[in-house]
Length: 398
Image (tube, rainbow, N blue to C red):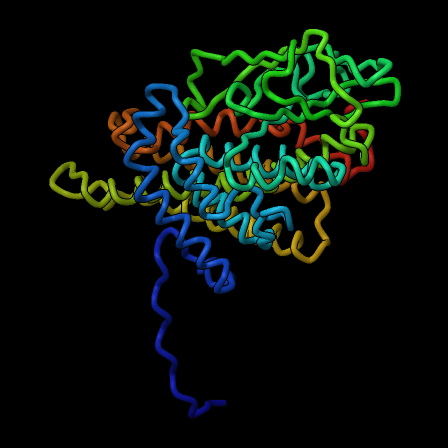
């Protein structure tokens, strides 16, 4: 049977970095977030981030600009926070990490690991005191959970808080803490007689010190510190009153993992774009290397992984906005997208050849950063076992 319907012209091909038109899924407000943050990264971050990475310094001058765009705690409501959708926050993370993982890490720690627990579990007095200033960027926060001997197993932490007549006595140390030495307030998790509790420890409190970790080859444009607590006296009002046990810190990690699932795709997109452009302009044997089958095969694989990761991130955001998000879904996305981003970065480096190891291009910087992203907020192995338990019902951790 034949029909007389006119033949439709083929649709125009989307850009190579968005072959499935994932951006079409965004609302007008979410597109505005994308365009605003992308412009800020292009104009203010990319011209300086290579130098900061090489010097191992964080561009603190950008904190006010991040706050001015409403990015600090943007997914929280009230107390000066923007109350944006989860997808809008994800889009911001993707654009920030297209600049550098250190920048996205700063925003993630500030909003998801420091501001979120205060908003979710803090007293009204704590919320009023800290959240407006943290949203404005005039106060920086950090999150103290990981210890030198308690990473993937945070229940093995040795930091303790002991009740006194007037409050608490905090002793111990925390390791690998983003923003640690520049933070005005640290959200610190410690063992007590009532289980694990969270405490707000302000800079300058006697007995509280922070020392930066040096000689890093990853996340160099980010502050990473060790926190020490030597008989730190805290008032009762320093404790987060509305949560006890590991549910508190793990819920914070889940918030941060969500942003990572989006952010990793920003780093991957930047590496892919650099490889595409290099493939078009670098000539060998009298032709662009993008014309060779092996290069095209690499780019095709990278493009496919990029599409898949961005679709996973967007679906994750939709589920979060609908109130249907399960932590296992976050583990899947964090595990899959960071691994995909690392593979894309490494493949992009091979296309750039020797140029790929210089800071003239973003690839090796992203590649090194992603090694840290693979580890923090739950290692790839931990998320593998979380998925394994969800699939089989068997707990491989015990």
